[in-house]
Image (cartoon, rainbow, N blue to C red):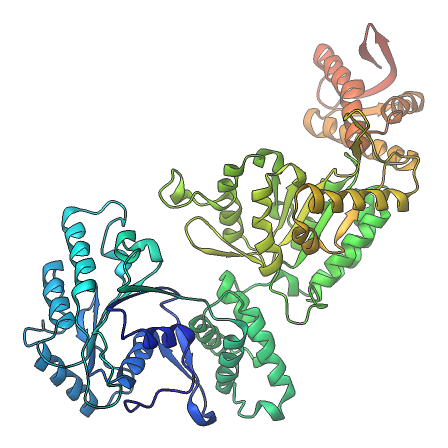
Length: 624
């Protein structure tokens, strides 16, 4: 592009850089520096995607700069030549560099810090009125630590700070005639990768962040990239235009360069334009297979309408709503009510209600149903995360802290297996600052761990459980039941949901987190007598089967014994199914184990439980 003819629209950070060349001699560009960047041309021409060095050079050339030097620790020092530069342009830039810097190291030379000092001095205070700039790429790697500089590193950055204040602007006879500095441009991953005293309280050094692309930039890039699929007129192809919108929404959190790579991946795998979301998933997760699109998943969910109620007893409302959410996830309709495609998790469930009624069991059933593997179920007891610093266990410790290299338990597990059910048990017991981490997961379907890596939750099902609303403080501040088994289910549901809303809005002051759960709050009912009897039978049959498997002993119970045991174990249902299991353990398993241990029957024996006796609080079984 000829000098003095800038594009109609540069990215905002480039416009800031270009506008402040008269007042700043050094710039720190940090953040999204490896990306490609959109340049919108004047006159409605098709936008272009440029690398950061090419983009900087266009801005500099438009301001009358003769050449751009780039130094990086791998390729050394070179005169930057943009993609598509002609032989004449290359020769012109090299000649200008040789004129201003006759001692310029040969291309590819790795200069020392002392050599860089000399080079920067000759640029900042040039002997001739020639405009030039120096990019120091990968500046984050110059020092071992920005806070623990070695002597040579400290001296080098001290020199750079002084040079920023003693640099001289350079005029030009034509074009942009205002004196401009020959800038040193540091490219860093993070702003604090350079010594803070170099950039702070120094008016000559300007720090500019390079943000991730917004939705508009991704939409424009998507329209450029679909041409690789043979689409030339989006106005005449509504389906292709819709595919562009979906592609842009699905790449939330990705760079424009990543969008280019996704498109290449799609073409390599022979995917059609409408299948770009699959390419995005492969790019993010690194796996080809998608359990959510397996042919048998719909059949498994249909079968789950019969199998799950037998596993999670007495909760028809909770099971129905859970299956509805799974059907929605399997059809790809999660977040369909939103104006744009949602990158959030495949499914979000918030199980609330009394203890021991099947909340955890239903989470396991979901894992087995969707992924055909109960091992895909991952559980975190949030009572272990009541302290703020415990959040490091989930995402990993920040750099410089012990355990930084290990990463987080949550992020590591999802990175290894992105298709899984994740249970956060008793979520109300977690520290409020830890709850904030779920905002990004629920909204964007991703989380950045302590090492700076992005982990995607877009194929996971998140299950939160809570006992909120079951008990409430009475007038004396003591905990008293807020709901009880005699209440009808609609009233239990209303009271529990009201307590959850109050907790997140008034107590925690985080209504936005409650809003992310939306209508996915599933309230469980108390276990009634009929459900308790069924749970008892299932648990007792499981005990008999375990005795046969472990000891090769056939065990039978007289009907009278079974009925007496049922009455003992289901008399108090305040603890739900867990209480039935606990009662069975104390009233039957323990005395049975004592009797079998003392009697020592041979393998293959057949025994019958004919009675239960209780003496002094000790229960015994009678075997025949």
